[in-house]
Image (cartoon, rainbow, N blue to C red; front, side, top):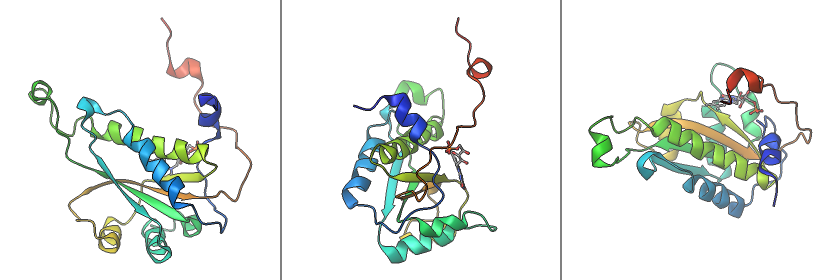
Length: 177
Ligand SMILES: Cc1cc2nc3c(=O)[nH]c(=O)nc-3n(C[C@H](O)[C@H](O)[C@H](O)COP(=O)(O)O)c2cc1C
């Protein structure tokens, strides 16, 4: 089994993919990893649209190319659109906070799980936060009222090298008491 920190270090945003298609089974495993993610009250306020058909993949790529950004996404071989769903919280908790209070954090855990599972299978991924929701909704038949969280681009990375991570130092972000 791979050391978790090693896997976390290998996951990086891939912004260019080879022509090799992504196996359907690998995408299923990525969604299975998201399904296992924790969530507040175990509400699992998420759903996923996995886009594999080349004509739809091309349309999703277009939707992610806002204001000259993410041009590389045309090389992605698959996308996962991550949607926020209504969270049903436990009655006692519901009295204290509104239903979607934990949802953003829940989704972050779920979509990171997708990226980590992708990395463990040799796939590259990149989370994309800016995209044309209307285009996605129309192309993928998703109601426009839905909350679109992120789109994840997937494929075999065209760059083997693992970049040095640019992160705040441990001492700056944590206190051990
Ligand atoms: C919510 C979110 C939105 C992001 N949106 C984009 C994006 O639109 N385009 C892009 O190239 N990278 C995007 N990224 C990737 C970040 O730039 C990247 O995770 C960060 O720079 C750290 O680099 P690493 O993922 O290679 O470790 C996004 C990441 C997150 C978590």
